[in-house]
Length: 357
Ligand code: MTE
Image (tube, rainbow, N blue to C red; front, side, top):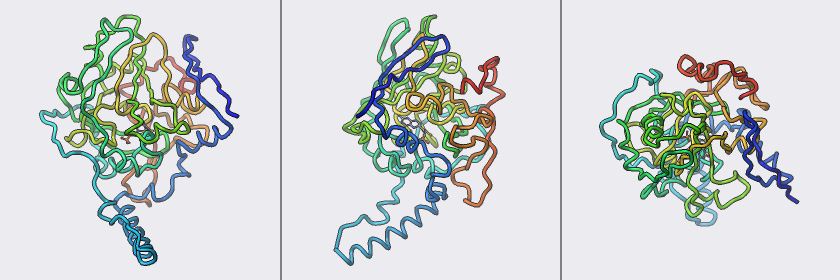
């Protein structure tokens, strides 16, 4: 029998948002499986992608040969497995460099587009690549509503012209203990917020991913996450110059697997705050519900700032494994606010970050 607990979230000012989540007996086990702790990530998932793919190609080839000999089955060829993903290769023009970029070497395009968390498609990191390939990103509109002067719907192509496109090479730290360096292309979220003309009572910004079960296989399932995926930021976080809306990667149109046509990147927070495939941005006077906080409020807070001194209840957050580095390379130390403390620590002055994790 499944019990329905109110997915209530305790807000700073005791305002409650409730959204029921079905929590059956296997709920805790399922929840713990969904975000993998570092020890659960198989070696295949921490192997540099190039090595992993060639190993998989080799193994698949061996299995294919055996199976074909035994039963004459049709099996995909290794070249089909190793297709580079998505990016239509459509170049974005007029991209300007940003003072906010890190000088660290970016992770390869291949790793960024083949090692993904995109639960609407799959909970396996290698599957979203293929499964999202035909995801439709046009026509695409984003609804802007809530406490704004006038609610409106913006077309993605006009959104892409709201501000000059910038290259932002950001560190990306997943709550699971791995990281990448990603050359996003986007513009400050503040440009869209200013265009939305929020009212004084707007204190938070809520984001929503598209609901398209016909295209996103896991949205047909009720045992993965509550859909649509939702996220939120406090207004001052959203207005911070480091918070960006992303439309591209490596100077090209954003690959589907990374959240095309529009996703968020908030580099000082764990990766799950950076919601993909956004179709709605709402301004609220209350702290909006967020997917992972609803799933496990004791593990994932609303803020979810990268914080090496606040361990996840099931693992340490003190260090991270860089995707693409040799499996023999030492883990690297995780930095407060993912290395962006100079710019963002002021947003949280006076707040107890052990409590507001
Ligand atoms: N947004 C949606 N809609 N669905 C998701 O499953 N996963 C989050 C975040 N945004 C996710 C999402 C997580 S856990 C991470 S780490 C990042 O996207 C991964 O982004 P990437 O696949 O582009 O590296």
